[in-house]
Length: 292
Image (spheres, rainbow, N blue to C red):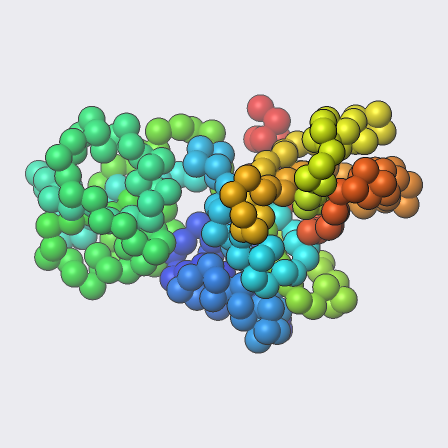
């Protein structure tokens, strides 16, 4: 049985992704994203499941920067989860009459429910937790506190909390994408459970500093080969102000002709290109639902 680390504790969306990808493996909740990545890099666990992008809040920069700059490993799979946030309260409270003084959750969960909180609890105190699961676990241990949490349905079940108000997120199409990292890519990865959405190759491209119009040339290398780019994002190289690299996602796996040709063209332009992963994308929702 393989060991799969994920951002815990139990009851997080990351656990849902990990279970969807690895239903038969040993799942190990860990406190922080760096800890998950560290253990995978050290081969103390076989896979790391960490959030990389949210449809509302954008890239999870901690994940991206840490595995690129600190513990480089290939991306071997990706999983998208529909995000449904609920207002959870202790079962000792009467949800109809209870007016919480404080709401606790992960910063992204708070941000995803901003409109609801402003409308119904404009003066509520906000306290941030490392994860939605951690917030739910705290409330289960402090049932008499004048507080509520924002978390998912699994957290409510895991920690014995009641859903006071369902679906308080601001946008119905909210999703979070998770990636799987491993220092053991030679072991292979067999996933059969979730819906297969397609494939991606993620590249890191650093432009030459003395090449005018380099980014245009980079995009052209993909365009004339009809390689579709689903994402391009700049991140600081951490070597000085104004120095950036680009994360580029191509909607296909690495092949023998087109992708190597594009990379060779970028190298000829003086760009540094690194393949961060070539992998399959999955979803927790059936394909028929996603196409509606």
